[in-house]
Length: 83
Image (tube, rainbow, N blue to C red; front, side, top):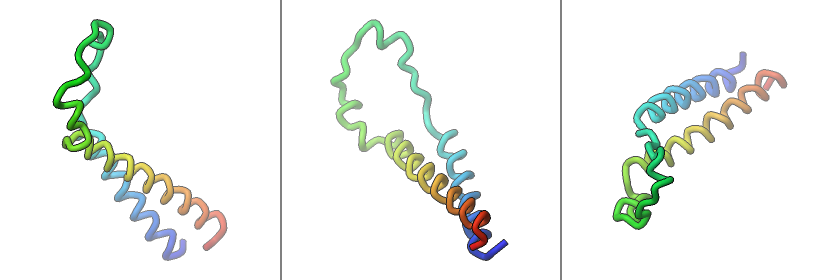
């Protein structure tokens, strides 16, 4: 196994652990039947949604998923082609 494959594997493990932690830290989506009954979607929370901790966690989770995916593909290419 080359040095590049080892470094990518360690980086992949860091992304995997970060994804687990971020996934467990997020709150659930409890819309349920409240959506059927209607309700105001123009609340202060919805206007400030991009600035909340929950939205930042979602955004960081997306970045970790992308990093994990790219890193996994690079590991595959590195091992299969013998880089």
